[in-house]
Image (cartoon, rainbow, N blue to C red; front, side, top):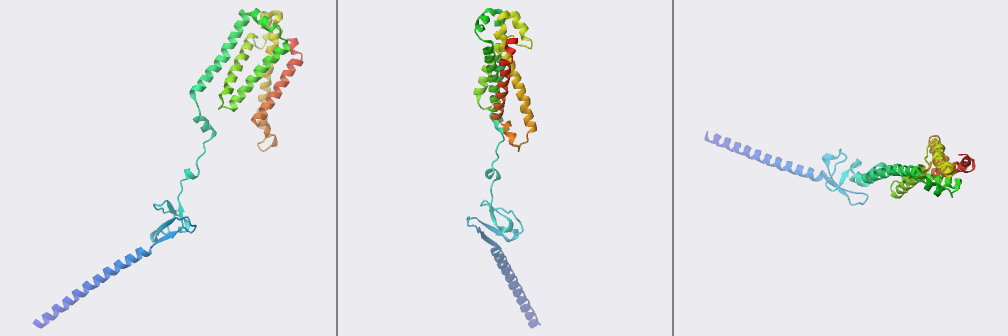
Length: 284
């Protein structure tokens, strides 16, 4: 019985030792396999274009496009490394004309311009009317040496240049000089209108105030009206060109700013010729 018990104990000890050896072998083998898989599943991909960009690709992410690393690259289609770029840096947004104008907007300047415009419209006209009423003889002595056609020409030039500077101020908004010239010429035109008591039936008022010396004053009023009518005709013609002419038509050049300015002066010259040589100066 003692011999059998001793044999049983030795057999049990050998089984325990074998079990421990198997567990050790399994653990070691598993670790080796895991390490081998980890080493072999990670590869360094070089940029075939020679740009010096490389990326480590994990075998577990082969099916995912766009995986990025810390070196500023990303994995594109076909597992090729692609340099990541900022769209705002490579394609900067260009501000529109309206945005540029808003950024350059100066509220104080435009307030000053509007105030100056109102002053140039009201004050010179009022001063001209006061001069016509209280200093009639002074006005008569000043305009008597002037030929009626010359007075009409002077008034036409002042008014036409006023309209021209207004157009240039609209086209060249960044240049203050055009707005300044427009204000000054408008003030002179309003002064002439005030002295001439300009309105639709001005010839009655000028005859009452100036009497027989009203010819140069009436001619100046005709010069102002001729320029204003020429501007109205040009506006209608220009709008018609914008509506009727297609953008791909060769005639579209007529709608350009300088072409429009040339057309404006042609119409103004025709209006002046009607006043000077149409008999209106001697009739009114």
